Every structure is written in structure tokens, then in C-alpha cells.
Length: 211
Image (cartoon, rainbow, N blue to C red; front, side):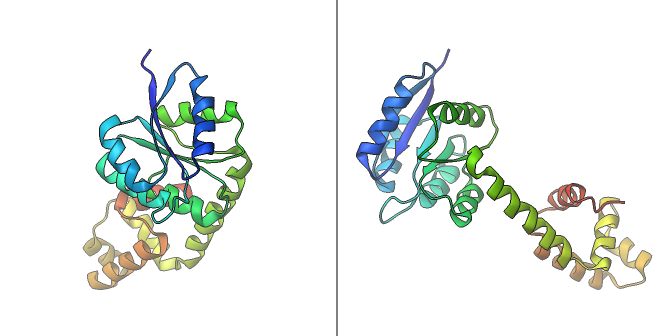
């Protein structure tokens, strides 16, 4: 069975060595490189081309966020997981938005670390059990805020968009100009934070906005 190639990034060598020792005991994993800074990591990743990068956030002048953005741009096939002592919402959301597939704290148990790696390498995402509820609550509150910001007219337009009507058709149906429909669409995009029509429809479906 092919082993998962893991690359470690942490500015504390002793912690990185400890993580490496833990992973060496797992049959299907192999540590192919280590770095204590973002610049060093970028150079060595070119050589080792790992399957997974396990990185801290605080790495000196540059951060794990910088590294994650770089990796997902240059090597989109490489998975990134966070292993940090930071359990605040800002760091978690920023790392996940940048493309990290998992977020763990440094107090994670060995079994959960292995479970997280397997989950991520199978294409899923993983948030450590002890902090998952915190992130979920924030996500729910954010979505509720987005819904509350939508006007009745905007929700009506979302429903018509879901039925594949054009802006011109929606304008005629609602007795408003096509320009006004386009303005509503821009406001909907801004308020929901979606980037495409598919994203909007997924959002509307998840929030039970479609009649």
C-alpha cells in the first residue's frame, strides 16, 4: 500500500520532532520533510512534493496562512492541515477559507490525529472534536445573519433565479426594470457572500429559502 507522504512545518523543532516520532509509528504514513519557516518549507516542498502538509499558524515573519495560500495556488493537489495551539474563530476561519482541509490543536490525541489525516486524504475535511461545535455555531450564526439581511424582494428573486429565469424575465414578472433586477442580484451576491449562481442555489437550498 502506498504511504501518505507528510511534510511538517513548525517553528519549534522539539515539537516537530515529537510529531514526527508519533507519525513514524503509523504504518501508512511517512514524514518526507520538515521546516521551521515558510520560506524553508516552500523550497523543500518543491523537492519532496508531499501528499499532506501539517503546519502551525505562528511561524515567525510569515505564517501558516501565507504557506497555505501558497500551497493551494502552486500545488492544489497537496492537502493542508493545521496543528496549532490557536483555537480562536478568526484563525480557524481564515485557515479554512485559505484552503486548509483540517484543523487540530496540539493537544490532539494520537488516534484522532491519525483519523483526521485519513479523513482529509480521502477527500473530506476534519475539525478536532473539541472545537468543531464552536465553528459550527459561528457558521450557523453567520448564515442566519445573511438570511436576516435579505429583503422579501431579494428572496423572491432568488426563487425565480432557481427556476432559471433571466433578469429580463424576472423584471417582467415583478413589473420592475431589468436594471433593478441586476441591482438586486448584486445585493444578493454581496449579502450572501456567494461567488456563482450554483453557490447561490446551494445556499438557498441549505437555508430552506426555495419554495
